[in-house]
Amino acid sequence: GQQLNQSPQSMFIQEGEDVSMNCTSSSIFNTWLWYKQDPGEGPVLLIALYKAGELTSNGRLTAQFGITRKDSFLNISASIPSDVGIYFCAGQRQGGSEKLVFGKGTKLTVNP
Amino acid sequence: NAGVTQTPKFRILKIGQSMTLQCTQDMNHNYMYWYRQDPGMGLKLIYYSVGAGITDKGEVPNGYNVSRSTTEDFPLRLELAAPSQTSVYFCASSKDGWSKDGYTFGSGTRLTVV
Image 1: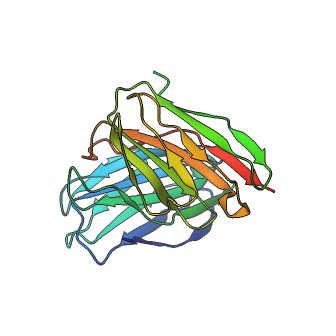
Image 2 (image 1 turned 90 degrees about the vertical axis):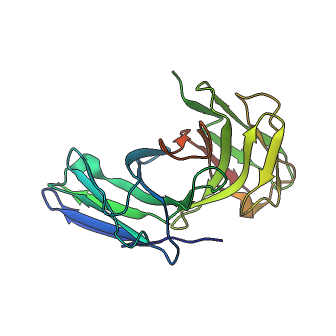
């Protein structure tokens, strides 16, 4: 099936550092979403992007919809221990019948 | 609003046993989904439903069955449990197919088949 290439697979950082992760695809997507999954919980939506080139922030999180519509980036500034979890990107090629396609996730560990 | 509620949270099954994973949502969402999550493999779609009485296969449907008799409930049935079905199962819902607000996920059922 359709795949999103998400990288890196895992990251080990110190508290206070900035984090960057990205998702790429060989296909064009009309919507990009970023989710966070806390340990033992289901994914929760962080940011949604709907237009190529769009840059959206949610607190210390900033995500961008790539201009080619084939990629998206998520940045976390000044990481804190509660940022620990798995971050998933998801894309949708068009509204209605197309279901979300998920990346395999980036596992983030923050050392205090 | 409870959102999407999954039960049970944990379950251990013996090979060949059957069970039903329950999922209910109180947001009046039309679309519901079942995913499985294996370590490092992301989320794989098992089955989905676009409304009561309508279900369709996802990427990995073998070994599972679903039904959607009401808008609120979307149970997932395992008939003959196998070790390969050891996984974390997530139910999700959305208002419709357009993902403006994304999918709302439950907190998962961790299933071990021994």
